[in-house]
Length: 130
Ligand SMILES: [Zn+2]
Image 1 (cartoon, rainbow, N blue to C red):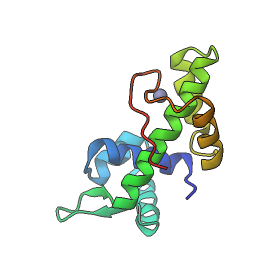
Image 2 (cartoon, rainbow, N blue to C red):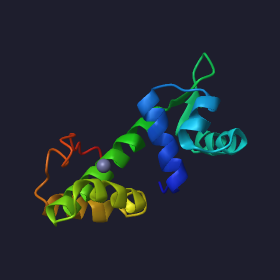
Image 3 (cartoon, rainbow, N blue to C red):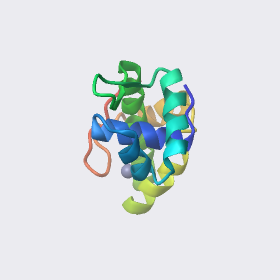
Image 4 (cartoon, rainbow, N blue to C red):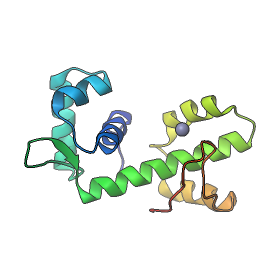
């Protein structure tokens, strides 16, 4: 499934929060509430987000899978960049511009070429969810 940068950011925020209301989500994303509302609605339609019994926004099981996939993509690319001389902070920022666009096959090719690293340069685990 392809996501826009804003969808990626939204999925990450919900993943970090566990559950979140629309007001907090929109301010975390730096967008207006109506924009956040239509973003959430779109991700609900894609079966990535849902509302819990308290009407808070949470990830579906599919959403959790994609959140893991996004972390995987980011960490693999960050490892590639950092290993090739890009300073870590820069590697992290630059990877965020492209990690959601690249095909899964490309990311897996890079992961294999890097000999399946278990941790990113920040020390976070690289889990092979895809
Ligand atoms: Zn990073």
